[in-house]
Amino acid sequence: MEQQSSETAQLTIGEVRYLFEQWRAESRPRTPIPEELWAKAVSLCAAHSVNQIAKSLRLSYSDLMKRVSKARRGTLPEAVISHAFVELGMKANMPAAEYIMEMEDRSGSKIKMQIKGNTGTDTLQVIRAFWEQWI
Image (tube, rainbow, N blue to C red; front, top):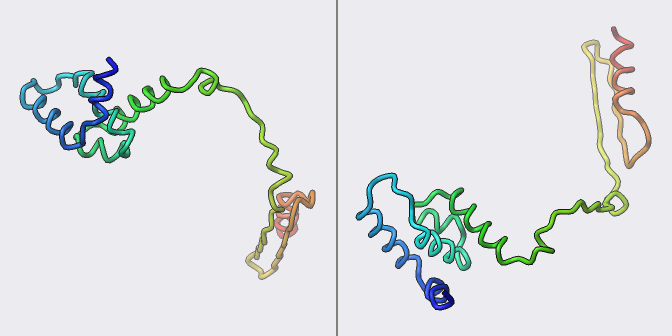
């Protein structure tokens, strides 16, 4: 088994493409791709992008990506795979928001607000008040 995986890692895209072409020529249409060929395709993704391999071997990108993801998950320790909620305290590190809002109604009345940081102002309430005075 160890010998097979090191042999697979040494194959080039061209060699694997040849194996796929050979298999396609010998098999019936709609026959599932053998696991051995999938394994060779997945091993190429260690050195090349999934997109490049999928195009070169004429494979479905999503099918290849699923197999690559599954293979990568199998190599990670369980502690890395486990899912947990992690809260990041990013508000303290983020710069204060700044935006400018301008409105004009049909009669030409205008309002311009420049807001920097969290002022506690409910901008939606200000907008409603502006428009309601003309209704």
